[in-house]
Structure formats: C-alpha cells, structure tokens
Image 1 (cartoon, chains in turn yellow, brown):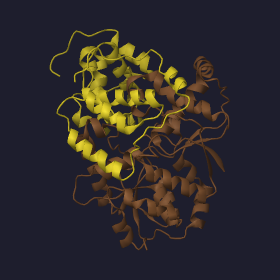
Image 2 (tube, chains in turn cyan, purple):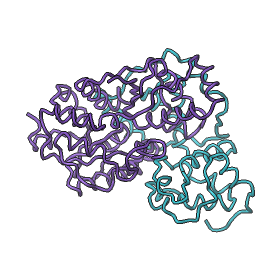
Image 3 (tube, chains in turn orange, purple):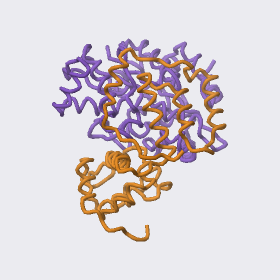
Image 4 (tube, helix red, strand yellow):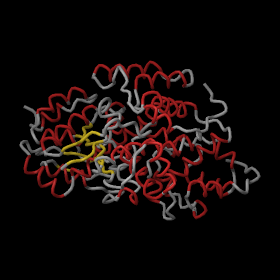
Length: 189
Length: 283
C-alpha cells in the first residue's frame, strides 16, 4: 500500500451494517494479524483490511487477495479486545466484491463454486465430480497430476465414493438456493 | 441415550475412519444415533464464502428435519456442527426467516433439541466415568496431542465450550482411557482447511508446523475431531518425522477393545500401527 484512493465515505458504514460487526471500534492493536494462520500469504493483513475499510478504501479492499484467503477459523474474532468478529466481516467483503464485479482469487472461487454446484446437483457433496469441475474451473498450470495422485490414493483406500448419493428432497434443496447469490462478472480461467 | 445423528458428507468418504469408529463407539456405550432422514450437505466453507442466505438455509433444512424427533442433533464434523448451530440460532431469533423456512420445507420448528458436537457429548462427566469403566486396553504410555481445530470451539459465545484457546474436553477423554494428554500450544490452530486444494502450499506449511509442534511436546500421535483437520494432517505433512493423525473416536475404539479397529489403520496415509505396536497397544 503506497497511496490512498479518494475515500468512499459510505463504505465503512456499509460493511459495518451488513456484517453486523463494529468495525469502527478497531484501534489497530493487530492481535488479529498476529494470530492469523494465513496473514503471511495475504496482500493485506486482517488489521490492515480493517484500517483500509475505516479509510474508505473500497477498491483496495474488494480487489485484495486477503478477503479470499481468510479461512474463517475465528482466531481473530476470539482475540479481538473490541469484540469484532472478522470472519463475518470477510464473508461480507466477498459478497460485496462479487456484487461489485471485482475479480475473486480464481482457484479459491473455483473450489467454492464447484462445491455449491455439487450440492445443488446431488444434495450432498460428491467429491469425485466436484473435483473434476474444480479442475476444469481452475487456472491452467495448477498442479493437476499431484491432485490426481492424491485422489487415486483416496480411491484405493476406499475414501472416495465413485457414485454420488442423491437426496430424495432434492427439489427442496434446490429451492433453498434462491436468487440472491452473485457471481463474478468475469472469472479468470 | 438417543440423539439425532447428522453424519455430514465426509464420514462416509474421506473421513471413513471417523464414521466407522463413531458408530462402533456409540453402540458400545449404549448411545443410539438416529440418522437424520434425507439430510443434505451443510454448505461447509463454500456457502458462507459466496452466499450468506444459503449458508443458513442449507443447514436449516437439517435442523427442520430434526424437528420430528425433537432430539439433540449430534454432528461429528465441526463445520456441520457450526453451521447447524448458526441455522438453529436463526430459527430462534428471526421470526420472518423461520416462517419462510417452515413454509418452504413444510415443517414446524419447535425448538426442541439443540445442535451438539460428538466430542461434547462423549466428554460429559458421566460419559467419562462410563468410558473409563469400559476400557479393556488402557492406552498406557501413549502420548496424545489433542487437536481441536479451529471452529469446533469457536466462537465461544455460540458454542459455549469450556475455553476457546485451551479447551480440555478431548484431553480429559484421552486421560479417561489411560493415555497421556500432552500439553501443547496448537490445540486450536487452524490447519488451513479448504485451502488444501486451492492453496496447497499454505496447508502444507500449517500442517507441518502443527505436526512439528506436537512432536516437540513429545506426542506419539495427534488426536483429531474433524475430517478436514485429519486429512490435511494425514496427507500434507512435509517433514521427515511424520506424526500419525487419528480421530479421537479411533483411540476410544482401541481402548474399548472394539473389533472395528481392524478396519481403520490401513486407511491412514501415515500408518499409526508402528507407534501403537511400540507402545504395546496392538497385538
């Protein structure tokens, strides 16, 4: 982060309102970043993301890799002296990014998308077809052979079902999907 | 004791050892698990990442299915547990949402029964007493690092667990079956979870650090309560000295002398048999 954009005055309140988390309380103690298991691979640490929100830096936040790398482990929220839960905040930022047409991190998005498609198809996740879809959605050059090796080992040990289990109330499950969900305008393959 | 059982997608597949040992242990202890009829996937990490409503509606259907029996809902998977917990809370707190779900699913929410994790159920004081009485092969000398993982105990205001940083329930269970619960600092550190596929490098470094920390604390094995934690620890340790990762229910099955254990060890990526033999726990 070198320069700041002109602040978007409504952004911090919008995030605070939608996530239900009191983000403006943060006084930057950075306990969240210190305990975060993935802060070292994020472009902005969790505390920096909060500071950027406070400063109205909408573009920087919604196009960051940080919002897609958060795994929702709840360590930060557990330790925050201001009782800010960052996991729902990161969820909210992903929804806002998708709605605003910001590009998600391709591999992370591809996995979640394939997972939800699998549930819509069967009612339960079927790993084999889910992984196949994920691989098709993933950027080229990702480690296909290594993943196939892991999948084969799991097959041999009887840990992947070859055929999917389909729930009887599938129509009901599909109705749960509704229409609210946003998809990115363009996802890099 | 009877519970509604929400097995989730992993205990029949990638976490098959968890499912098999859970069934056997509960049967041996007289706990009846009534599988939720026609349950669906809770949406795991994917739903809350992309769609907030869906992340509550998917587990919400399972909560609705459980209303018929009105029993506590037991889940072995921490993600299933957490999502069902959040959905149940939404049913209780948001009347408009409850009405909409009831209409969509044709079920009346009664609020009977609450979501619980399997470890919570098996580590209640009276269960600890029962389990210790039933032990036929005490895990003497086996040093176990209890690994709770990230979302099992958190957020504490929802789960109500003993301590979000230093939980003790699994440790007590290990001690109840004669094992040594080692003290270590990584009980609730995250394994990287669903990044296993999209960012394998991250999960490899986290799993390796966890295993090294367990070894440093003198552990022979790591006990897990989550299919995601276990598969990451079982397949993504990069250091030479690999530490077997077992489900806590596998350790219980071993201590209770249940025949199911013959079906478990061969399915592990890191074979636990050498260390179990070394400790005199396998014939």
